[in-house]
Image (tube, rainbow, N blue to C red):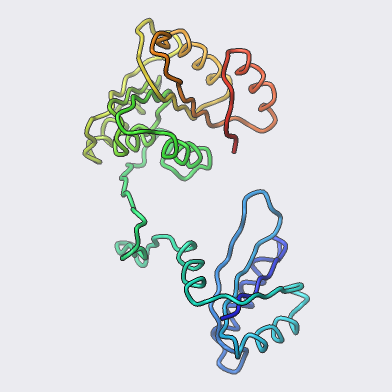
Length: 274
């Protein structure tokens, strides 16, 4: 098996993929091959990985050369069949075959899928925004079973619900939006959370009650984030001796430097930025 790698400018990726799909469906065209598309964050290129049996790889390369104006220059390497399978599996995601049929391609693998139901309403954060996705990824990475989570500006409650599903001992949330309170509580019931998140209505910045936490997560405007972090530091149990993890999302790149400076002034040290 040979892997052929094509690096195509992002603006030409759709054209390149269309040509690849034509090649795959055209019985008179190039020999058959498998492929997957990779679009790494931070790069201006889309990367196509084509896999063809060793005897036919040369013909595929020749076909690519004929369409060099679209594909550009290709590079190739020899891989074993197991490598191809591993590469391909990484690209798979569950997908809707029809409006009521969800295909799970991970049967027989160790990859675990968690189904979360979020009713669409007026509250923010059903998971389709990049800031929500980044917060979810970091929460899953840093949350340890048995920890306490504080969610400021919870919206639909998706972060709190996931924290509960991933083993948090307790989850407490604050939001000033009455719609968010109602919808988040409904979503928690819909997902049968145990423990159920304690969704409260109110401005966390101005509460007098101390709410203990191990992980502070918030996906809101940067100006609100600053005040919420300050308020949380005033309620941190200093005698515990354990570090607190802050997952802060929603910060525009143009405001990052100023925000970073302010947080460092409060004693926070960022260990990861996306």
